[in-house]
Image 1: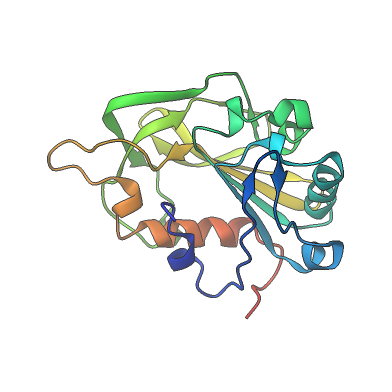
Image 2: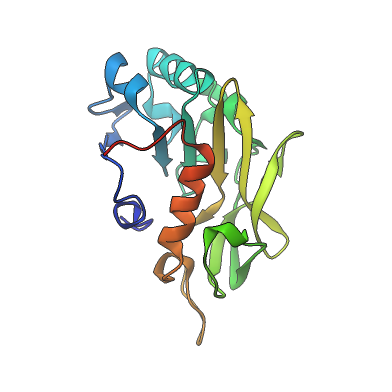
Length: 199
C-alpha cells in the first residue's frame, strides 16, 4: 500500500499474493501466471518462494513477461535472492546489508521525460547496488541508481532500489507522497510489460 500500486496501475487486473511464513499464499497457477503481463515483488524475500515457484517465475520472464522488484527491508541483499536463484534474473549485483539510510534524503534525478512528471521527490532509504553490464539506468537518487532495467530471455526485469521509509526534513516531499509517483510506476510498467494490459 505504501507504493500505491493500486492508484498507479488502475488499468491492470491486479491479483495480490501475500508472502509470509516461508511461503507465498495464493501463488498463481501455471495458466494464471502465463496470462499475466507483469509480476511485482514488493519487499518480498526470496526465501518465501518454493523451488518450483522460482522456476515458474524464471520461465515467465524468459518467455516475455515483466518482473518489477521493489525495495524494502526484507528484500534484495537481505532477501535470500542469491540462495533461491532469483538474483541471476536481476539487473543488479546484490551484497548483504545493502539498504542504507540517507538522513538528509536524496532527490530523484534523471527522470525520463516520457514519464510525464516533474518535481523534486526525495528518498531516504536506498539499496546501494551495482548495475550489471548491459543494463539501463532510468532514475537516480543523487549519485545512486534508483531504477535499473535489463532483458532476461524475452522478458524484462526492473529493480527499484528506493523504499517508502524515512522522515522528510522540513520542505521535503517523500517520493511515495509525491503526486508524480503513480505516473512513474505506470511508466515502469510500460517499460517492462509483455503486452497490452488486461482490462
